[in-house]
Image 1 (tube, one colour):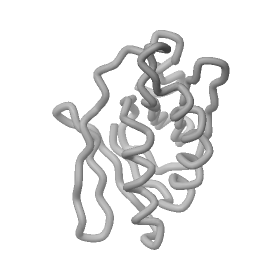
Image 2: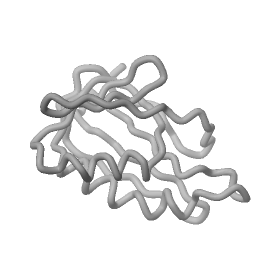
Image 3: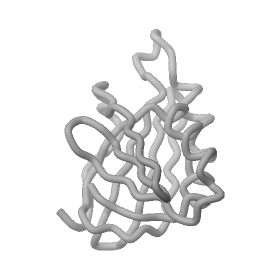
Length: 129
């Protein structure tokens, strides 16, 4: 996965799905507060999905997607980081080696991809690779 998107739009999408992701995070539910990030180069849509025990939510934003793909990361960790970069117009995301790489201005960081399995959360890209 490789893309570039508005940091403000990404932050808003993450804020919208964060409550569902946090509600789902419990040992008894088997869910961990992870979100799916799905990039579709065919439609240039970046989807952020969270699955809760009683609810699920998906937010879509426009992105310049060079390579379609999917990943799962901890929603709170990712949202907290993106909140700090919303004064930057764009953020670049890519996946490699088990990490989600986040780039903006001259800054680079990475977040480990989640290894949990969320069977009810569809992770496939409908159009694209």
